[in-house]
Image 1 (cartoon, rainbow, N blue to C red):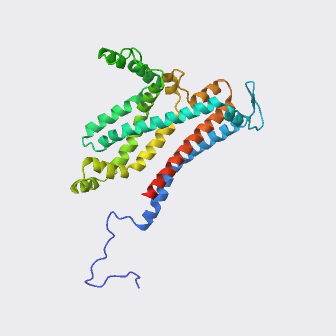
Image 2: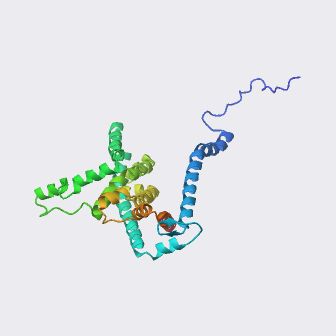
Image 3: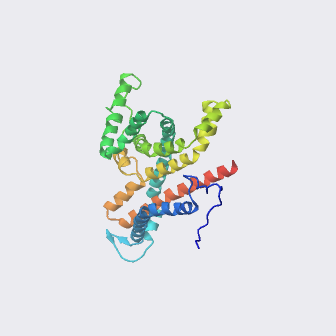
Amino acid sequence: MSDTITAPPGAPPAADPPPGRPTRRRTAEAPFARWLLVAPAVLLMAVIFIGSLVQLGDLALRPYANGTIGTGVTFDNIRRFGADAYSWQVLLDTVVLGVVCAVITVVIAYPMALALGRMTSRWGRSIAITLIFAPLFTSVVVRAYGWNVLLGDGGVINRLLLSLDLVDRPLRIMYEYQAVVIAMVHVMLPFAIFPLMGVIQHVHRDVLEAAEDLGASRWYTFRRVILPLTSHGVVLTLQLCFALTISAFATPALLGGGRVQVLSGLVYTNVGAVDWPMAAVQSFVLLLVALVMVALVNVLTRRRRAMA
């Protein structure tokens, strides 16, 4: 006797599951598959990051005297940093530089990302993206020389201002704070434009059309619709630009002319002087500052959303 169950005569055939709809098993396996794909990269980055922190921590707690790194554990290096007023001043200057560059970068990058996100021409967008990425294809030294040609006393900008009788003498821009800010903003722009462009592209077109149908102007739509929907991307971009700026070394060193000191420059100086324990402490301080600023921005953002 067969165990096969047959449908009664005249009954409609059993319906197949609709195509394209994931089954429960496939839906349950999807998160696991995603984690499986990213696990090797996450594991590699974790090993490198944690290994570096362990090595820095070991150096920071080593005794140091007369160019010699000893054995054992000591907190003298932390006390040396805490008692050094110059290190604290450089740390403050580094944080201010990071905040200034991050804010200016996002203010410039946002309208550019908005234009790229709404651009319909594929060729136009490809050309614009290539031009934005172009500075990253050159070395820091070449970019510094280019800024010298533009911002120097005999540079293009000063010659133009003098020829138009807008100034009586060349402006002092090169090897000053403003030169470092201009160059750092230029370096950070690609890192700000593309995250912002991705967030802006996720704003659905129907939302903008609904605002337009209700009589909202472009400025009102931007201020009350686009900006709130992309605010999380703005916050993340600010954090990214701040972290990259405070850790920069080559650009402030080449364009600051010794007048603009950052904490990464002190790390480089102490490494050259074989004071590796102090360099390790300063590196930890730099990492701690970045983490504190990121956490502070996250807390303020959550409070603002809770109050809204």
